Image (cartoon, rainbow, N blue to C red; front, side):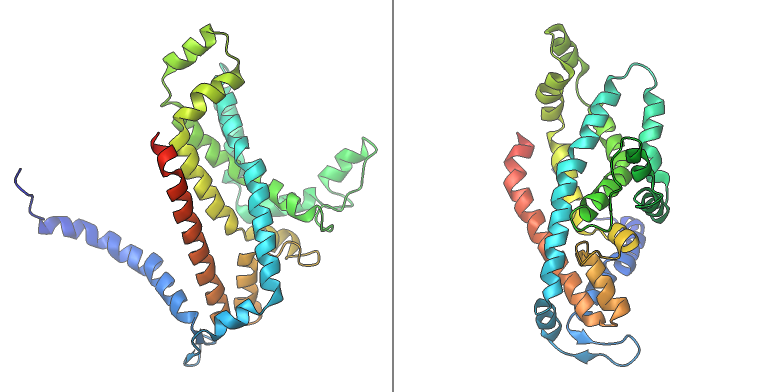
Amino acid sequence: MPRRRPRPAGWLFVLPMVAVFGCFAWWPILRGAVLSVQRTNLVDAPVWVGADNFAALLADPLLWITVRNTVWFVGLALVFGFPLPIVLAVVMSELRRFGGLFRVLVYLPVAVPPVVAVLMWKWFYDPDHGLFNQALATLGLGPFLWLQDTATAMPSLVLEATWAAAGSTVLIYLAALTSVPGELYEAAEMDGASIWRRLWHVTLPHLRGVLLIMLLLQIIGTFRVFTEPFVLTDGGPEDSTVTILLLIYRYAFIYGDYGTAAALGVLLAIALGVVSAVYLRLTRKWSRA
């Protein structure tokens, strides 16, 4: 078979995309890596400090608290936030009526600007006049210090984040469900299989590839949580909700230590790269089965 020769006209279509990615994606990554080995205030000439920023970062006891908090957030978000969209998508696909209405209602939180949604939930969690405590007061419960208690602050953030992000994930699963052959569901229904047995034996095996990708994306996304702890708790109480990205923000814009902030960003990128590589390696056979 003759080998096709590259056409110059094709490069003209590719170059704008390469230029845009280079300016807005690859250049900031490269600039952040350079900043991590410099001391700079972004005004005066930077000073090369080598690994000093990384050494100062690893000596900060707050770093390990933020790592523990972030891992705790990721764990809670996976336990509660990963299966919920799957269940919602399967249930909605089974609806014979009002399916479109439920799709709109589920996706509605995604259309709300993130900061507005977080501020709304801040009112929900208000210990004196919040929606949750007022509703629980009718049952003789509470009041609860949702965001002021170290035991409930992080789960409260996870609840808001799950509510805000579930809509788009549900739509992805609904689109993936259309690829499952309907004959399999009809055969399962004729055998008397319940919705949960159809989910386990028909739906999940066919969505295996989509589930694996969505799980990886959720792991990466939850490791980068920032808006919820920044707006709802500002890292409190007692640093129990300080996450890695919130610590990067403090280093850069409160302490003015851009080099250490960039060093933490580099470490986070390396950690997520390693996690992604290990995850893809471990699930490669399963995703092809």
